[in-house]
Length: 276
Image (cartoon, rainbow, N blue to C red; front, side, top):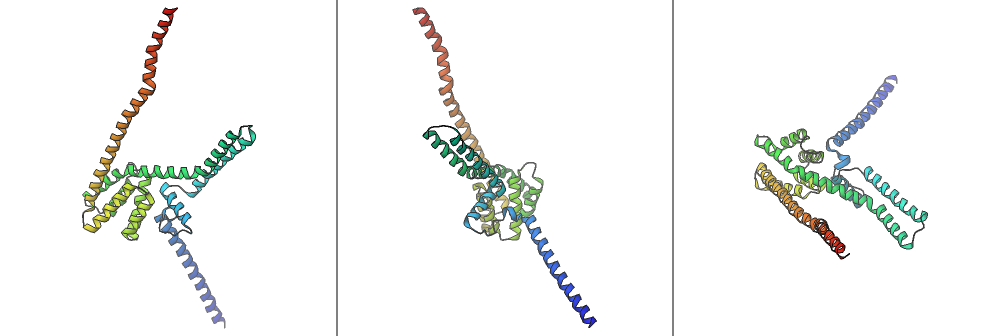
């Protein structure tokens, strides 16, 4: 009887130990996956509970901010709107001014968070596209040295922090992890959706074409780098042309009237003095 109790107790301890080890192994595996693939912040593959939450998560990922930050901005907008509404009751204003304050409060309360989110998305896309040509040039240098695409992305992501900003480096790390874990199509689609950048989408489409046609990825990157630099030069030329127009407009609106006044006023004053 004692032997049976001993074996039963031993079996119970073994079962508890096995269950504990399984729970610990599952916890550590999930933790490792979150740390490597940054699942909490940027995993587009994870299904959301609703379409609204999925769209919001995608926009937060493109903006590079957390939901907590957006909530803080929304609370700030509601506080500012509440202050405007309080002024309506504190100040004795006309019906028109009260309406203006009410409309402004409504716009601030409802529009602060969406405008902030869209502004952050645009700013992040701009930062990514500004660093894209440098990132591609570094990849080309490594590929010319005989390295593979995965090794090139790893090296640029690891050593490129001095010339490339964090946004593009994080995206390259996520893309590399998804590229070796999932199918290439999944990695491509997630990269386009996470960034929301037309330039990134163009590069990805050419990488797909490279896989389908057998064209070397180095050739694709060289062509893309050349096109990006040409686009940047075109934008600079447009800004230079618009600057001339703006300077001309400023001259006609402000400088030319001031010069006419400097000439006309003394002449008019001299004519008046002569008449007297």
